Image 1 (tube, rainbow, N blue to C red):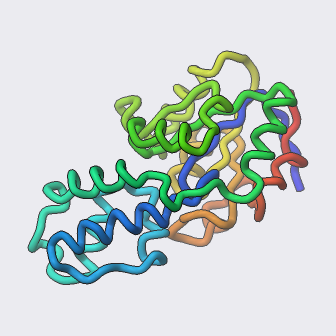
Image 2 (tube, helix red, strand yellow; image 1 turned 135 degrees about the vertical axis):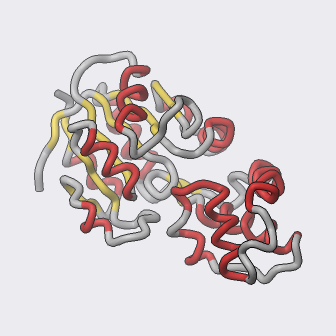
Image 3 (cartoon, helix red, strand yellow; image 1 turned 30 degrees about the horizontal axis):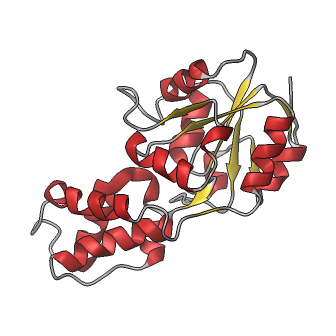
Length: 221
């Protein structure tokens, strides 16, 4: 397996460092129940997480009746209110995440977070899970006028980090891998995330099955 030299590791959040699907599933079903619809399964929601609240609501509407009977945009505040109030009720770090991030911090490698989740929802998750202090830069999907797969989202996140030197991206789905490739940056993918398609079809540089695998893959430049 390849080994990479990097002074900065930029992570995606949902499906990469945290399993947030259960709380997003609950928020989706809360919206559906509020309009008298049936609920959807966790598996239906899991592979749409990276596309935002509107897409989750649209998925729910499509799966439970006439998708045009209600406006996903009109239902979005109901979703966001419930999700914001229950943002880490069932959300957890993936196994090995904390140990892995602590290892790299101790090695002098900076950690950044580049997620398409709105920043107002991202920060409470990091605080609640006790990992905010591990990141020297955090950017959300609304931090700039662009977001992944636009490579500028990664570039600007890296620019907010204090050090110099090469960076790489760790993610779980198309926006992450395509953004890293467009940025001419190594792309490491996790096999256990929320990708809609087989992760190997996106041709990342490496696919890992456990976050602890990163410790043997990345060395400080």
